[in-house]
Amino acid sequence: MSRRGLVDGPDFEFFRRRYFTPAEVAEHNQPEDLWVSYLGYVYNLTPLAQAYKGNQLLKPIVEVAGQDISHWFDPKTRDIRTHIDPLTGCLRYRTPRGRFVHVPPQLPRSDWANDFGKPWWKGSQYEVGRLSAKTRNIRIINTLTSQEHILEVGALESMWEILHRYLPYNAHAASYTWKYEGKNLNMNRTLEENGIRDEEEEFDYLNMDGTLHIPAVLLYFNDDLTEL
Image (cartoon, rainbow, N blue to C red):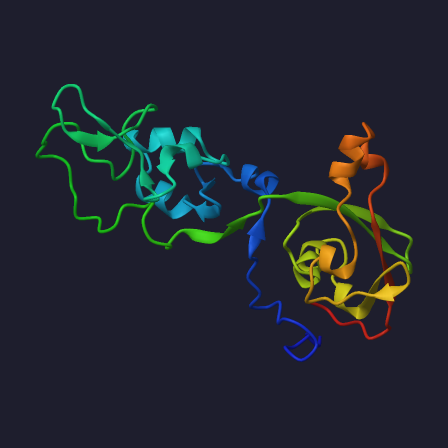
């Protein structure tokens, strides 16, 4: 089966998402599938959870699986927030949920191994993408089959990224021309850049339910059966 290449669009065999919504992060809320977000980025901590499986220090992280933990961090230093330890008078990491993986103990201990390299929250080894600061809903209507789906997407996602989200519903999504109000969409641009305005604030101002009007993108079949 032919695949769409770089001339017509991204090669989805090697495609990497840039943005994830909070709802998507929340789906990964188990020790065997553990994501968190903080300071605008999304991290897959599953390998960390597997490496420290059964370790009590993993418990605070498992408790926040699928959640945003930006409040753990100082946004200026991007390090864990600190405080003065009343017992030792030293500057220490602030861990209200209890000490967790890679945080040093309060006092020196011979059983703490610090040969792990960088702490898990430093560096980008677990980073999978950015957290969408703002999301919106979009209706996608297949004019060939009359099927309709509503997707929650990031406001900064390109149409190619939205197409990628739509693939589970239609593996031949790239075989369609995507249109809004009769005009072909530029797949490298966002919804807003294509003239599909986000009117949520206006609906809120008017005290109206924004879910009653969700913009619709229409898909017209091109008859080439491209599969991504």
